[in-house]
Length: 136
View 1 (tube, rainbow, N blue to C red):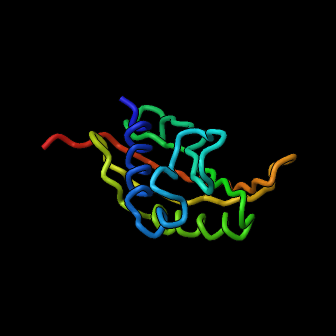
View 2: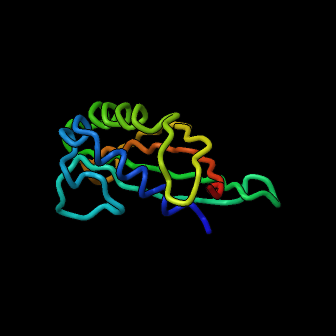
């Protein structure tokens, strides 16, 4: 069974559990989709791709993105939040139900202004490798 959903659950819990981050984005600031009319800034869990690390082995590689969406404060605020998120996730050993997290790495952050809106987005990309938990 893939660790993808459990990994995203652990990422959500880690981000939602940080008081400093929540002071910037609010208690409901980590979401799985952008909802019109909801408070910003927010962090949206973006795309995820999962696959075998090496053919025939049990480990999985997960490439996923988080998007920091900001209206007021623009690129500066998006970058500040991205820095906090990178600090919370890069190299951290998260607990994942039924799996072992081998590595979690922040790969890059790219920022842009959304055309026809006031919104700035900092897209963060991460790479994680998981293995099935070993029986006790």
